[in-house]
Amino acid sequence: MTELSGVDLARQALVVARETAKKNSATTKKPKRRTGTAVVQRGGREPLGLGAAISMMMTERGLVAPAAGGTLLDRWETVLASAAPELAGHVQAVGFDADTGRLDVVPESPAYGTKLRWIAPKLIAAATTAVPTANVRTLNILRPSPGKTSPTTTGTVPQAVPRTPAPAARPEQAQPGHRHPGYLAALAAHHTAGGTRETGLAPRIREAADRQTEALRQRREPEEAFTEIAAQEEILQDQQRRTRHDETLESSIRAALHRAGAERGQLLQQLAGQTVLRHRHQLQVGTLNTAVASDTLPQVSIR
Image 1 (cartoon, rainbow, N blue to C red):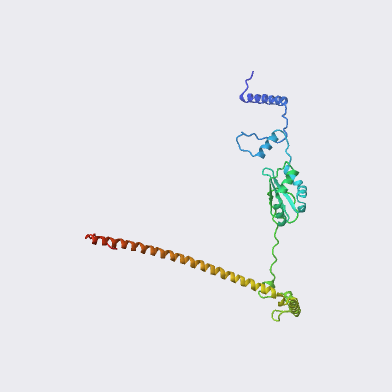
Image 2: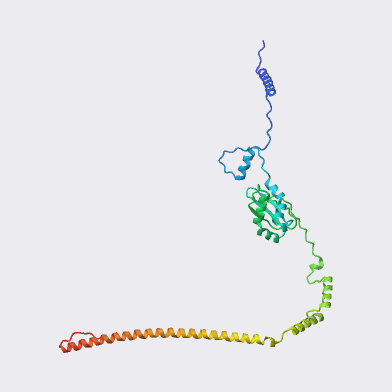
């Protein structure tokens, strides 16, 4: 019996491995294909928003959440007709954020935007009533956009409109001081019809101004009709002058009385001081007389 070399042994092992793999693949059942959205497993420690948590819970249980934003945008015209029929066709809902409850709307003009700010609570209540699952909390009024706009998602950047290049200046326009023949013809027609600043107003304008002035003079009431009113006005002015004079006189009298009271107080203080000095002098004189009578002269300082 011939011995097998290492290469032959390796070949036999490879053949056996292939046959074993074929048998195993024939007996193993193919796994079923999973349908639906894959659920991301979390450790439970990451912070999660309320909307994301509800969406994850509904996805894990196989529930399908209604598209509140799409439903609200589709029924916007109905909501607008029930809350503010005068704005129908002039305001469009362009986006809705389900997490924050913000509804983005675009008015057709600034006037409609002001109207929207006034009735924002009413529109929010109508939208919540029409689509209870939307839970609209705020109304975001965007810049006015003329014409109807189709509902789009929030944050869409409008495409830039290519600008038309400005026409090149004509040779006659480039020259300073040059006047176009059409301008000169229009200026001549204006001078012919309406006159110029040098010649004054046109005759038709002057005649119209004279007629208006004459009509105003004729309709003006005579001065005699206002004699009684003028007399009453003079009486009122005289009363005002007297009132001001009386107020000035009263304030002067009050100031004089205040000054007299202050002077009287100072005079009384001076009289009281003189009385005290006189009484002290009399006491000292009496003491001296008593000392002379008893032949004793005490040392008394006279002040």
